[in-house]
Image (cartoon, rainbow over all chains, first blue to last red):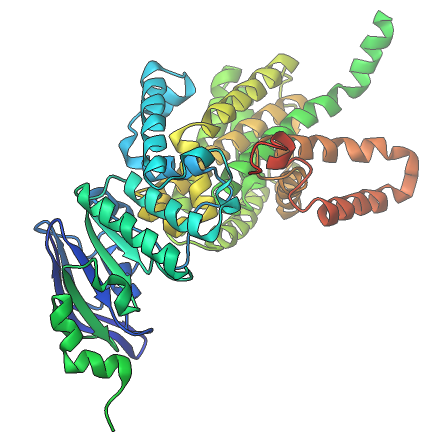
Length: 251
Length: 283
């Protein structure tokens, strides 16, 4: 479904990604792991169009999306969450999800101004759908809250809901467990599995291997911008390069 | 009684007209502020609208309505030309571009013969009736009410809060910013046309940097979280110098002090989101 081909990314003289190659199969939960600073988020930024790679290509469902702007990539069916939460704090939870549904709306400015039936039915239908999405992450009772008033864990869930609202085929989740305690992390991983069962392909970034070993079918390991291993969790765990990256070399 | 009303109207109608025009200008800049962009070109857009409309009614004998629309369309078109290259980038580029643009326009007004050079245009026909101002303001308020609860208003708000996140949600951020900037220029141009047809003259000195900052102050003082803020801000700032007239030479100082206190104690402006929903968004 997603093919990342030989991505190279330089920031000035610094090469942060050096020939990264991996594939995400449809329906999978794919893990992208690596120590801090390995370049994982940069991969997501390139796939979602926020950064342009220096070289290499990103293929999504057979189409080259490498240099498309972020909104066009969203329209292709890729959505994401951010490591440092980026919800719209002053807007309500419902409005956050409705922004996620932006491209599902089609009424014109004239329909807005004259309050035409098309606008009213669309708003009503999609507001109901937005409530359904909020209930997926158990936030429906707080739909009118300003998003900034949510707890940290709640904001992470809202970000997930907002990403789902774009009706993506592929969901990129950037360190969902960052800043969460073990119980919250486990709950969130359960939710990711639930979302996957609904038919969404998911790619998760994590630096703590233990967190996603249990839920991913396939894992790629990045270290200093290079792909050092790829395979099933069992294979990756035994790979000497991975052990070295995480634990250091034996003396 | 009737005589009193008539004389009051005669004394204060210009002030009332100015309140409406300034309200429109405050709304024109609010549109760009609402998507996180700063425009310092709205005074120049107003000037373009004033000159365009006045030239059309004076020299071409065009109907007032047509002149007003043309006075809005020309600045909107120019805004597209400035906005498309600068608004592709996020940051302060629009502020820089419009700052320079405002000066270019001011100098152009001073030196072109069709705008009357430094003398400006005198004897613009008195065509602006009070109901024109009411109608335009009514349409604007209706528009902003409808915008707020629509997909377009939500997109602008999302861009304002976090442009990167908004683009990932599939919002064409550049398109929305350019659209908001051009629509703001249209409003400023119409306000300029209305203004020219009750002050009877258009002078190149009115539309410089100083007035661009005044327009920004209208919006900031009133608050930029809702569209009511700019309307309240412009009304207060238009009335304040008149209300403080008894202070004589000290009135500008007091005017400044009042602004200072509002900025310190009401950082979100006089009207903020919380003004409307005291309880609703608390959990």
